[in-house]
Amino acid sequence: MTRRHFIGAAGAAGVALLGAPAVITGCARESGKMNAIVVILDSLRRDHLGAYGNVTTKTPNLDALARESFRFTRPYPDAIPTVPARRAIHTGMRTFPFQEWQQDHQGSANYGWSPLPDDQRTLSEILGDAGYTTAFVTDTWHMFYMNFGRGFHYYDRIRGQEDDPYRDPDTVPEKWMRDHFLVSRSAEKARQYLANVQDRKTEEEYFAPRVFAGGMDLLETVSRRAEPFFLLVDSYDPHEPWDPPKKYVDLYDAGYYDGKEPLYPKYGKSDYLTSEELLRMRALYSAEITMADHWLGNFLQKADELRIMDNTLLVLISDHGHALGEHGYTGKPSLAMWPEITDIAFMIRYPEGRGAGEESDYFASTYDVAPTVLGTLGVDPPYPLDGQNLSALLDKGEIEQRKHFTTAFHNYVWTRDERWVMFSRHDGSESRLYDVANDPYQHYDLVEAEPDEARRLYEDYFLKDAQKVPTPR
Image (cartoon, rainbow, N blue to C red; front, side, top):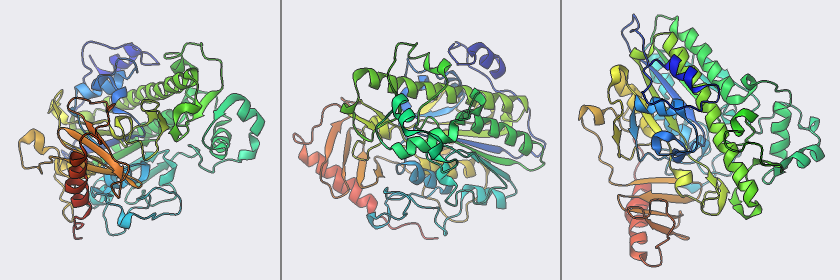
């Protein structure tokens, strides 16, 4: 069954799952060189995809892509949140440990929230030097005031997401906003966003549709050129604010909720919400995912129609997750590094069906994206990258063995091995410990029962990783 048929059977909201996997067809480009597409979905939790075991949130296109891909079951971001994770994706270099554990950009209180380092080459720059046409479409507005457009021949910036100062917030009456929306985090952010989208009338004007439609336009452009191409499609959805079209919301809450819409979550304890408000928040989040999934399907269908996918590497990854009350928190507070925030989706679709349907429990990460793309395309980086070429897992080649993994979010650190997960403040205080071999959802904190184990993970993993000398460049 072709992807075109799959999309048609799934319907506009993507509600029908098919038993047979979708197959992307096409013929090789005349150049003979492989293309690459990287898709980033912001705040997408691993446990909300059918491919990772979810049975509630409808993600037929992501699940079909997973069936065609080599999928990682234990991927984690190098660093959290949005900008630190993307720095690793663009450069193949670790953002962790954050330099001297200090705030290094005035625009955010999060450590590591800074532009791409001047001494690091980006994936787009390296591929551009190798003769690739490079293109980038995003609504992740933090990219606009930083230098993440470096090295791209085409750069499509979609304005208005979240609190991008795009339109006058005073055009939204504060009383009207508070009458209709549960504003629990930032009234200023909410007013700015509502002003940005107040003229929106059709689904095509929502952000995920605009990003993937922009990606389709760029596919048309780059596929007409003689050179091979690299395309980065970076969608801020399903990041909050959550206000998807009604047809997607009705898949999860068919008209029963009549309260204020939880547009923005509070980054903290979830006890400010009633049970109905929390369920509504979860419904809105799932609806945003399903909308993004549907438009990703349209994007993949366009790639199919252009007949490029048999000679194109496709990487799909998320940067982090989002808490929805599972451990008593909503949003992305740095102290809440449970699976709902740390667990990401990561899959690689190779041409000719290589690795399709296979999976790996390798501790893959955001900083592996660039070396994997370069290694698969046969392009050498100008210096050794921190990440690994994950294609070696398919080819039985050499790859760094990772018996543990460490990440960080602002002034909190997280580390795990085969059995244990520990997270704490970066000085080791406020630590929590979980036996994930027996408690994968991390409900039972064992730090008081196993203090030596928590200390071991902190000292042997976090401290040693944080003291590693950066790769010379």
